Image 1 (cartoon, rainbow, N blue to C red):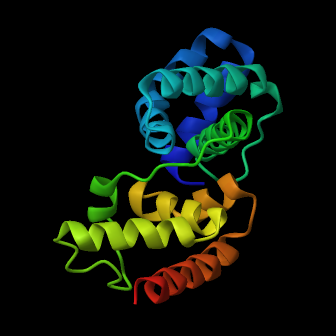
Image 2 (image 1 turned 45 degrees about the vertical axis):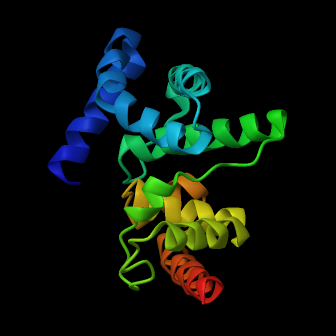
Length: 179
């Protein structure tokens, strides 16, 4: 086990015994979980509520957390992901994609190289909306949140190898949609 993961797992184990230690985990991850949620709901109040719910859920279920070789953040992302999906189901809303985020998309497939003009950003936005929600989420996690394939696997409940295959297919479909 890597030293960083080992230290983090030790902190989680301490938090299981003494809930006041959970504050250290909260401080370590609250900003990145907030960014993740905010990019999905695009509403400050809703994001704050969902982040609070995410950490409440994490603390409430901390005793059931088991280290599986993934960073603790993967578990938090999974909880946040589920809370966002639940919020969308309850509120029957469509996820919005920020054009500025799309312009920052990093791509090994050169899908969005040369994304300089607003019209090109609109084309990416339109193509993203045509993707299956799971494919859209894979692309967001990988390229907007810069989450590793292993963490994405944990968040989405699929194998890391499957993440790579699904991501390849999603990028290929996005490229086709943009042509």
